[in-house]
Amino acid sequence: MRHLAVFLASSDGRDPAHAKLAAAVGTELARRGITLVYGGGRRGLMGVLADSALEAGGEVIGVMPRGMAAREWAHERITELVLCDSMHERKELMAERADAFIALPGGLGTLEEFFEVWSWRQLGFHTKPVGFLDTGGFWTPLLDALHGLVDAGFLPAATMDDLAVEPELPELLRALANRLQHPPTPAHGT
Figure (cartoon, rainbow, N blue to C red):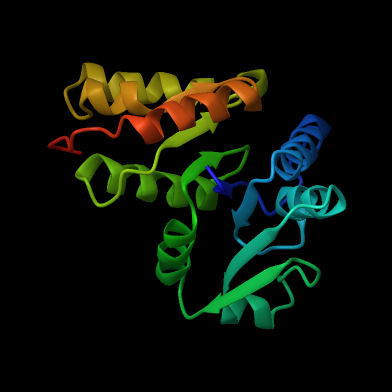
């Protein structure tokens, strides 16, 4: 795995632990020689993640719609900023450049981007693994709701089982690498 897409908040959130997590992830990706692919923002957890990767000598690729960059939301010091025309194009470009995808703490944008690439994997549009970094149980309520979708028959158990979920980054990276070697069979139903 050479390029990892990370979806996370463009705000700070209320808990300083989330910024510490974003910083640790950026540093660890750089240490491992994994290029960070993210939304290109300079604020919030996105900025913390990018700054920490850069400070540790890592490569950082940001992908952002031109309209957002015009609002001065773009990080100016990243290795490469890819400008595009829409959020849909942003996700497509991030998906092309990444070998795998993870979600750190975030809100609607984080979830929307993550669920789209996970859905694409389920449908067989790509075989790149996806996972949640569930440090401190941040994603546990959402994961419980997703298990409820499995119980209700709206999400295949195999799709849920294919999702990598770990509380620590090294374990999550190992789980993603394992899924890279063993891609899923496309499931039916969403």
